[in-house]
Length: 336
Ligand code: ASP
Image 1: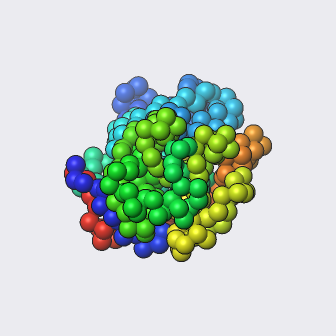
Image 2 (image 1 turned 90 degrees about the vertical axis):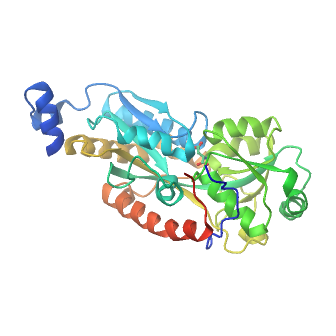
Image 3 (image 1 turned 180 degrees about the vertical axis):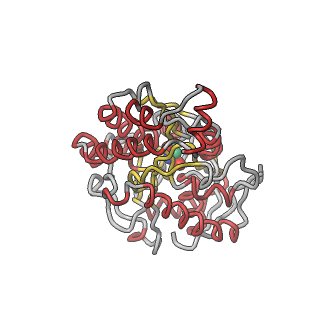
């Protein structure tokens, strides 16, 4: 793997399945499938470790979708390499409606970062819908020697060589935000990759890593419990659930604006009746008062119904791939 801790100059911040199942079972009736789906447990693959922000969103939405579908949605955490290990697994999974996949912005950055990929983020997946856009926070271990953002930046610039910065691997949101931060303040800390920011948070809480940039879905309760220090939120506007944390933009990092979009997918060629039911359940989950409340507590909200659609996710993924590709190439950041 090539070194990726270099500064990144970011510019601102079925028919086929019918035939397959028919061949296996001898017969295939799309109508019977549509009526019966889902008749067993659904697995939602999360391409990061348990306990992290993507996992939190997945469990929340999956549980509510399960209520609607009258089947359990279990979570399978397949972390590693910024989400590409989990994505590769889903791309190879049976397209039968029983495997779904929650990923984030990393699904769009991977093609530019990884030279060799065993899957194509667009061609190997069926989009179901966008889920939520989550702000991030720049946080540090509790005893980090800086009382505010300005002092933190000064300290980081003076001590970059001895500081480390946790992330969830190349192309993860924490990686992108950290690279953007380091390039903006011109400080090159050592990056420490984890299989997700759940375990990274454990090490931050233990003081074993110094800094991290991560979704509010992972940092809010630790910030409120004063277990970590928070220096900034990464969005243009402040986050209502963290009213005391100023934006990075307002503290000198003009134009710093990073939020992490999440999308729900299925493997390519998943039958349309299953996709339709999954999407309908997603829409219900995103309006579920419990989901809305919990997301609000964690600094985010579900996307509007018009965005929780296959067409909206497909268009967004494509535009994000187009947006990130040139930025990442220009920065010369890549992995083998
Ligand atoms: N927050 C992580 C990221 O940096 C992923 C996770 O563990 O959810 O992409």
